[in-house]
Image 1 (cartoon, rainbow, N blue to C red):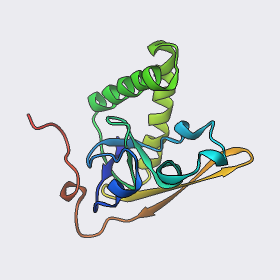
Image 2 (cartoon, rainbow, N blue to C red):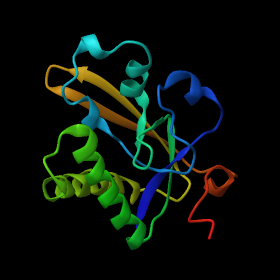
Image 3 (cartoon, rainbow, N blue to C red):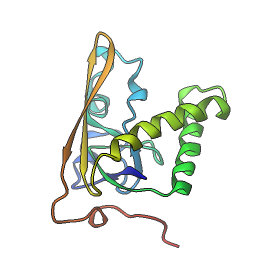
Length: 158
C-alpha cells in the first residue's frame, strides 16, 4: 500500500503557509477544508493553502510537496483514527462513528492516487474555486537520483 508524506525541499513553506507541515508527515489533499469557501476567503496565507497546499494528517499543517511511499496497515489505521478525531475536534463532526467513514474515504482517495506512482514520486496539487465548488488538479515529478528517505523520516525512532 502507498500513501504520501510531506516534504520540505527548502524553507519556502514557512513563508507561505500559516501552519507549515513538518517533513515526513502523512498527507492527503485536504480539499475538505475549503468546501464552504468563497472568493472572500482567498487572501494571504489562507489563499496559498487553498491554491497548492497538501494537508498533513498529524499536524494539520500544509506542504507544497508530498512524496509517494509505502505505508503499513497499522500506520494506515492510526491515520484513519487521527483524521476522524480531527473531524470531530475541528470540523464539526458529531462523533467518531460519524467521522470515521469520512476519514477513511479521504485517506483512501489519496491512497488510490498514490498506488499509480513509483515510490519517491513528487506530487503537487493545484486548486481553483469554480461555480460548482473546489476543483483540484495534480502534477507529478518522477523520482530522480535522491530517494524520499533523503527528505523525510519514515517509521519511528524506536
